[in-house]
Length: 169
Image (cartoon, rainbow, N blue to C red):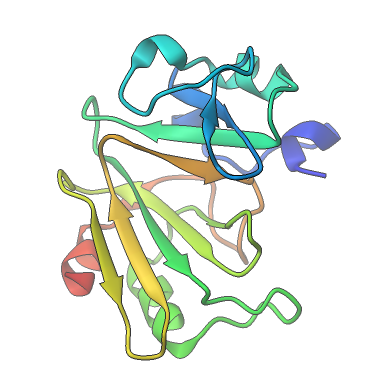
């Protein structure tokens, strides 16, 4: 059960939970409003507060919308985490070292990571690594499925991840 459902304190940074850019999500990662209708990553009228979204039973989980109102970004590392051992691929481990002290959570699939931080990212990108893993970098017009499952000892804050964005592009 997700942290926001289990009544435990969520690891999601306060900087995100105070933004009114939350949506619910379906099992297939379609964004939903708190009422269960279609939401949009570009229409603020379909977004809600963290509290409203966490209390909703629509869909299967939460999502956070990346918008041009600030510099919050997400770097999604796909298929880089062994869900049984917690070990990351060498390439992903290097990215995590570069990210330093910022919020990192396990993706809904359990085998990916979301690195959250601050950087100037206006155009989304997908980068394929030679070991088969991919990284996606987004800052505007997307929503990211959230789990609240902090990876390792990452802090519940958003740090500057410009160096990670630069290194990946």
